[in-house]
Length: 288
Length: 288
Image (cartoon, rainbow over all chains, first blue to last red; front, side):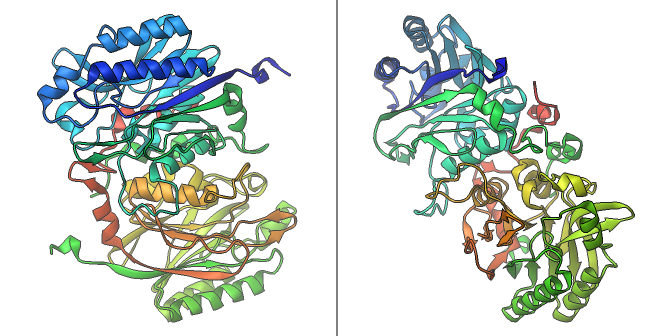
């Protein structure tokens, strides 16, 4: 067994919960309880939903602004930093980030030794465009105990380029804080499109994907639940979770498995088989 | 109703059949019978499997070379051209293409007025690399009666860039001659990964996808069947077909639906929401 075949195993958790808009203190408290429970179950990396401390459906920019906080430095981040240090784990938490007058729909990435960095949602969904700026940090890759991970948030999963940037950047795991909403024409006998995109993106990039969704109906907007953890072969390791209950998914992952599964057979490799010189058109605007 | 909302409707067909290696004359004859049957059922565009006239599992480059033919000019293409003219339809047929000493795994694209062009498989699977050159024609877009379509072949579907190039290039329909083989760890209670990738690629690019697969076991290699036609919302319009029977799928498509479904809501559009300035990394080699 050569060095790069040594397992780099980690138990990870996705927290499916129901944040409630306007109840930031209570949302934060419950997120901390779930992180404690995940640690008690052996998890070393915990993914929380998009905007998990604030809720999602803001009535105005003022409401969104009031709920936002600096990352790091705000009260939610500081509490997560203390908890990550105490429990010795990584937290990836969706948060409304304030930078001066600007807001971002972000994921705070926090390790046992403190703040690691921020992912800012690159593709804004619907009314988010009224409150948030599009992400300006690309797809940063973070390291933890010999493994590498990146983040995406909800609608980012609709853009295959995001999985590619994570994989090309060296990530073996994509952490996805999300607030999935229903897609049109969803048949009842097939996986939700969100789950299906997670499976396809995992398979075609040989990435673990850990998606933590919210549940509930907020100001008339229903959310899907069905959080899931997918392996780099594209198939679920845990979940999909229920559509309507708070719960936690756990899975044992080996970062090296992602590297090994990039080879589909002796002659094919999902990343090396790409032909970037053919793809320049993908960076062009669409033909009208 | 404005001009671009006028339906551009067309019945399309996917032929799921079993080509037999070494029986080129008979394979061609059966492809023509299926095309006649599709026309009799009202189809105006017919997709046939990858390498539908030659079979897939070649024992040597010599065998592959002998089975190949110029496109156009070879006997299979000329027969398809005569049939397309007689029936007034488009044929997209997988064919082993010979260009001097080189071979390509190609799709011949033929309309009622003759040869329209060729798609050459951009991503070669496994032992194909022993016989074929990688495609050098990009992802050309073809027009038919006010609609636009492009092609991909089998393993190309594993590269989200191909769907993107088709959609950005203006296609509303992706025609996929294919010879799908089993993927590892396929659970029995989920769609095959090939079907799942067709659904995700259709949804995230608002494309119709018409995939015609082969069946059977050739020289020990099993094929999946399960041809399908997917709508631009990502959900099957016809199929998946059986795993093991020759059959034909039919679906009525409206090219304009693809254009309309690019808008996911008043604020989101699957193509215009892309952020190419963020994606430059997707054209880079992977980090080791």
